Picture 1: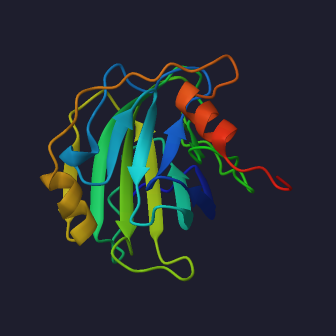
Picture 2: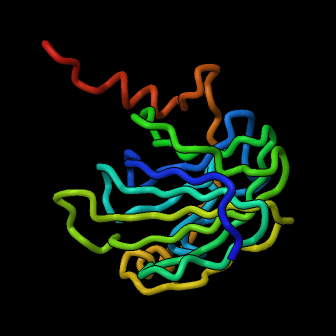
Length: 195
């Protein structure tokens, strides 16, 4: 097994059943990949999205950036899936959908700009959380583009996602501030304190 070059761990905020892996300089893929292909990870808009069991809350995320392909982690993971990414800047960061992380995790891109393979491991997506019960391990290494691949599938949430028909592609145009028009509208309609 390849030792990771960079590792980090921390809580990540989830909204709408997802958190992201993004490159601040541009899209991570040329086309969208429906999460229904793997039940865990896909490409939407310009980011990779990791699909969570909880709608809103925190999950525990560990990142490991490698220079060579590692073996999948041998832990008690219920789902393991891989997709290919491209990093135009050589920075691949875990981020929340609509907020900033309290603690930034290290970049998953260990080898600068180029093509990478992202392997996502998940467990706890079927539990009803009162505290953090969902755990994720993201491994990333330089690799040429390849189709999405499902290595392990055993949770009910992943099975539900895989059974859904992919919807038509939706391209999200970002405003100069990096916020989609839909996000801006949601924030504009949100009740303000004291009103």
